[in-house]
Length: 117
Image (cartoon, rainbow, N blue to C red; front, side, top):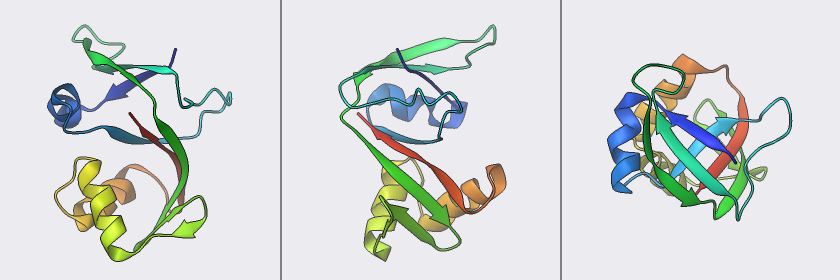
């Protein structure tokens, strides 16, 4: 029963279905979401303002590495166009905005999981 919490700036995109993927660090306990599982989507978890955004079936999970100027999916580098499409699908307007977000919130290289529904 994977529950995913989203920052408030992404909540409306998740709720509307515009954002149908997320990138997360690997869980320390190894219980990462898997294709076929129901995902429970929230914003404000563990606060008084917690709000359920919906439920979705996980369709795919892919290992992702984000480094300065480059994205790797299952250890294969993406093209510039693929990187831009991934950034837009993740709720960003530009690839630079995507990179700046990950640079601000995580250390590079970032190792994690691309989760799609």
